[in-house]
Amino acid sequence: MAITNVLLLSQITGYVIGLILSLCIIVPMSMHQDEFNGHCLLFSGGEWAEVDGMLKVLWASTGYCHYVLVVGVLMFIVCCVQIYRLSMLRYKGEDSSFLSAFIEAVGCTLLCGLAVSAAVLVTLGFMSWCEKITERFPSCEDAAGQEIDTVDKISTNGFFIEIGTVQFAVWASFATWVGLAVFSTLKVCRYHQLENIQVSMYRERQRLMNESNSPAQEGWSTPPVARAAQ
Image 1 (cartoon, rainbow, N blue to C red):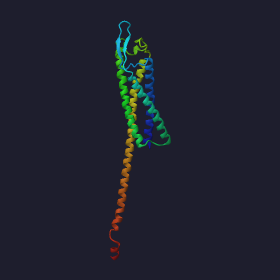
Image 2 (cartoon, helix red, strand yellow; image 1 turned 135 degrees about the horizontal axis):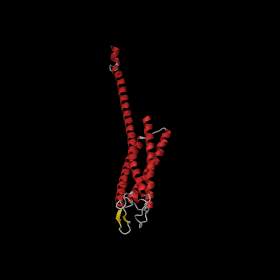
Image 3 (spheres, rainbow, N blue to C red; image 1 turned 90 degrees about the vertical axis):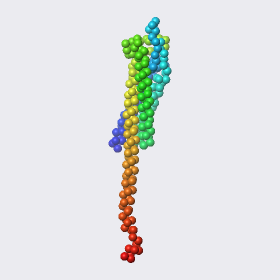
Image 4 (cartoon, helix red, strand yellow; image 1 turned 180 degrees about the horizontal axis):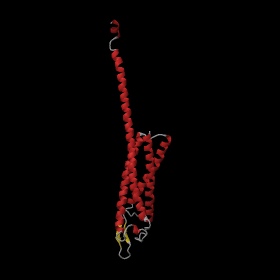
């Protein structure tokens, strides 16, 4: 029971952390797309104009940012549901069933894959953008707040902090979901172990019952009439 409580508390804590990190993905990424007029800087490039020094941006697909947002929203929903469900189980002094624990383990594993894919997209996409920015500025951070594209009327005031926050949050989310997948797998293994113990106890009980009945049957192996004649 103590192991169950520790696993349950660990899962609730993990989902709370995942909830906070999902907000650190959703909010900054939404702010970035709003400031960039719906554009997404991930994997975007272009050429610096020699006349006015502005960047003629070749915008990449907004699907990169949308994918990261969808992953963040999905994490937020799952965390909210799981926090409520596990909190109610702890309040009632109960625990998940084998089926729900198995589904939870599979779901956490899938979210691990989504998190790491989003993390790779943000990291590589941000690096691609910063490589173009550093052709004019000493660092990508120095371009924040500078006018680099007046045609698309983008605001660069917070892009470095916003995408940096998203990058940290997605990698931290990946680590969190790995931990949650481990906790769920441990719970499934615990249920499997308990089932094996119950089966072993049942077989041992049946063996003992068979052994206790065998002497009585041997004692009555001689017919009653033959014993009376003797």
